[in-house]
Length: 277
Image (cartoon, rainbow, N blue to C red; front, top):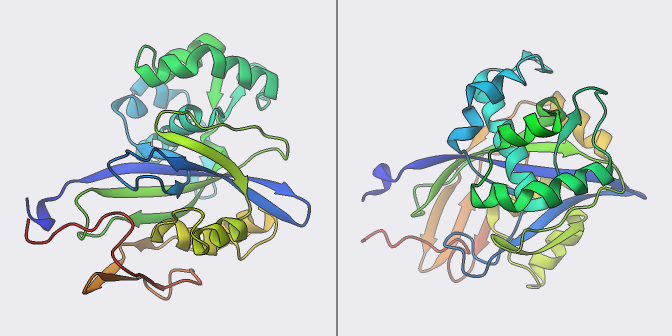
């Protein structure tokens, strides 16, 4: 299959952020070492769209919600629903409200829902719509702010069209990796995550690194959210050059990122595709 024929898979990534003293943290997971994409890398929770994310009955429960530009389209809702589902599966956090009270889920209620349904959802024994109906929940699509939009370059054998969303949570929000797709997790400041990548303690791929640098421009969730809403999200498909195995990524200088060029020496961490194959 040629680069141009490589299918591009729609996906969602969620940046759960919470305030701490003098800074904020983002929740990250380490992908399973045997993953066929970005194995072992430190990433934000997320995954590809599933048909259930566009289920008419599920979309209907969210259509009354609005974003900064008005009502969401069904496509915008589907990407957000995907992010909520993936965050529940990968981080044990249900971004939802109690339908009757309109209040965010308490930690106790969230934990009960996780213990009752998370494994079954992961196995496909139950769908997100059924959980919403059984627990009288309203998915908090309006709590998710579009932060970034990245498309994997043609350089790679697997390509994703990924929307990144911010979701602010309480300062004491608990979260935990699933032990299946991810094997570790942590709340970390963007600066600390970058330091871990620079020191070789963690694998941090270019797209994650760039978005961590963008997050690190701010010191509170409020400032981060306000800046995000005030600026246009520009779609990014990095340009890549390979100089005898040293892979350089470049992105537009007007996209709002302090990091616009980065070289991974000895090959891209995502495993560069052999262009002759």
